[in-house]
Image: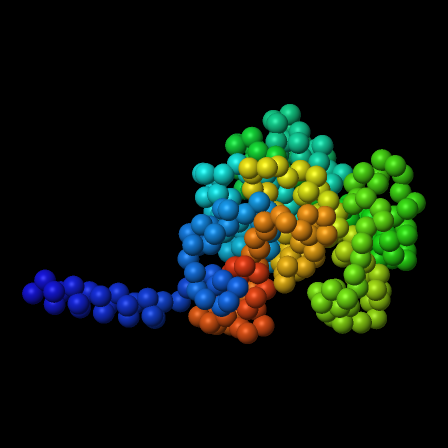
Length: 284
């Protein structure tokens, strides 16, 4: 009788899971479904992790916090993000060491519009646990100069102090990187190669500040838009130019109509791909 009850329970359980409607599923680079904890187990042995997000996706932001907290239980962490520009590091540090409050942070740091919902939990985790949080991105006005005023050469006009907020000049650039070529095809007639160079100035600068702040026996966990690390390009390409032996892990977030099977074009984007249902609400 007990065996019969157990058999019926197992059938009901399997049927329930089969007919469930998950908000997301995680896949590895080969397209196999994996659990969150399997992903964490593999990533905890890395020196540098890129968590690629869709900026307004709540699943990605929730999993960023969950992964950060889980890794922080057993590893020393350094956090960093595209969402903070390098010239705002002093202001961010003031908040982290309790010299200013949230209102003060908003006056001295250029915060993204979705900061309170999506990034404040990560910054506050760093604050509570006395962790570094690195503002890695190039000041947006400098990237805009590259785009609007003719390429990398415009960065030579920066003052000595301003150049400290950018990757050391001149930095390498490969226009044949597939991601950059695809970006150029996505925006025909909108700035030509300068739009790709502006993107590269961000990638190079983020790589620079990551490598400048990474430490042995720590994990540097970096939050960025997926397009900055998809296909092991972008920031990761610049990191590997300087430190080819560094152990990196990557995560990408994608949207699909059906999360039950990863679309062919999303296989291999990263070590782990978070597939989110297209009907998921957004944070802005």
